[in-house]
Amino acid sequence: MRRLVRILLSVVLGLAIPAAVLGAGFVVTMGRDFTVHNGSAESAEAASAAAREPAAPAGGSGRIPVAVLLGANGSVATDVLGPYDVLADSARFDVYTVSVHAEPVALSGGLTAVPDHTTDDVRNGRAPLPRIVVVPAFTDPAGTDEAPLRDLVERVHDTGGLVVSVCAGARVLAQTNVLDGRRATSFWSDLPGLRRSHPRTTWVAGVRWVQDGNVMTTAGVSSGIIGSLHLVQQFAGADEARRIGARLHYPGWDPSTTTAPAIPARQVSAADYPYALHATLPWFQPTYGLGLTEGVDEIDVAAVAELYGAVAFTAHVVPVAPQPIVTTAHGLRLLATPIGRAPALDRLVVPGVRETTLAAGGVPTWLPQAEARPGDSAFDPVLRDIAAADGRAVAATAAKYLEYPVPALPDRTGRPWRIIGLVAGLVVLAAAGAVVPLRVRRRRVQPGPGSESCAPPGSPSVSA
Image (tube, rainbow, N blue to C red; front, side):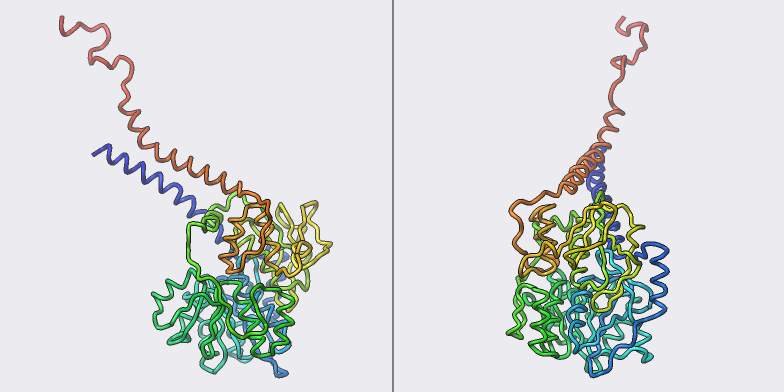
């Protein structure tokens, strides 16, 4: 029985040690991914001033008011920035962000955004009631902190406005009454759970978007870009959608049709191991500065932040800029650490430009747009860069979790040596922990010198 207990204890320790390490790593990753980063005292002061001075009221001039929601506890960056970029690029729409409070909120990949308006602004008429509301994935879709945003979704729906969810934003809608009796879609890995928990909705896999009456839902992450192009086509015409689509080069979008593009109906598989390992082993990650410049396109920012920091998890991403707050091409306000006060960077990545004066004291600088090929979207050069550094499997898995078609990757690719080393170390640590109960027992029973007889040396022999 004692031996069985020792064996069981050995097995428990062998499993508990890696489980604890991986769990702690996941907490670290999520803390980096969905934490408001003011960067410095200067950034915090600028954020506070921006929160006290919300953007000018939207609406008017016959434009359609569109509210892109920002979860109080964090939202997925591309879910927000993709639709924001597409819709705000058309003069048909007046796009603004809304959150529960005016304070900065976290986006995945280390980004922090300053909301234009609060739910109180909408309720009190300081901002217009949106005719279209875009709902990204929230970190806590059913949380009480997000209740005012869910109330706004129901109000827009009940007054005949269009409710649009992106990716796991469908989980937010599932906490309201807007999906009852409708067809809908969501991120591929969420669909099985949604079918079980919300059977009154017909959940559809294998399409980029589903529109049922005044509710539209899109598939995973980057699908919100194609869904938004469809909205431009629907409300502003095919020519306007074609113009914006030509800038974005999202693969698979056909401006000649209004039918939702088909996509693979995916499921979790063993090939997804790079996603799990990178998300739970964040130690010794390189630190990438995300160089923000005034007027940068929102999707260009999303591609860098989301892929490196929130899908591939190959780097800790820190937004940096010459000033503490940057306004993007269509008016979104993002916080940044002034580059002179940034932590030690291993690399500076500056999206959206082919030339830049932004520098970080001799740190290698990379411009994704300078590496773009004809027909590339903002995501393609970043995926190729990830493949070159960490291998095809890492890039392909990142594309899968972004729900983005895998581009042509380089023939010669790297290996994820950091992860390989950490996994090897974790195996050694688990093995060492598993051996401890057995070693302790062996030391207890190991005979010492002279223990062959109970009699002390020199004592008379019993047989004598």
